[in-house]
Length: 124
Image (tube, rainbow, N blue to C red):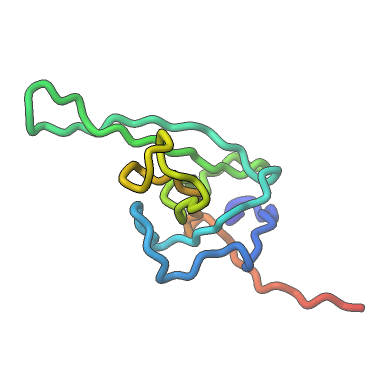
C-alpha cells in the first residue's frame, strides 16, 4: 500500500500484460487475475450515471467493487467483470454463444495508490 506501506502480497504471475484489452481500460493501473483477499476490504458500489437522450431513461448503471487496504482503509482499486471469458460455460441462460458470455473478475489497482518495491531473491 502506498499510504501505510502494508504488503498486499501481489504476484507477478497473476498480472495481466500491459497491452491486454479490457472494456474498462487499463491506463495508469496494474490488473491481476487474482489477489490475496485477506489483504483487502471489498465494498460493493452501484452508481447511476445520468444519460439524457430520452425523457424516460434513468441512466447507465455501473456496478463495481472497491478494493481498500485492510490496514489503513485507503482506496487501492476496483474489481471489474471484464476479465477473460469463462470459455467452459455455454453463455448466459445456457443458450449458446449468442448470449452474453460470463467473464472472470479483474482486480485493477491504481499505480498512484501503490508503493512498488522490487522483489528480493530468496536466500538459502
